[in-house]
Image (cartoon, rainbow, N blue to C red):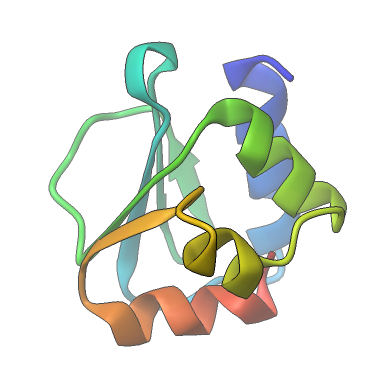
Length: 93
């Protein structure tokens, strides 16, 4: 999945209202997806919680093929910042 496709998928998942805190998905060289509430962009801004993972793994997680907890335990997903914000993301992804 391209960064554009991933961004649109995230945007559709939070369109009904996301979480109040800010989250950044850091996809390395492919870029970032910054989410705050229903606002989604590709800006590289400071966030309450940064989740570092590959774009491929994010695509699988958004499709429901990769469990976020399993991804974290398996080292496919790293959380930097407020872990409680990452836990709230479970309701979105």
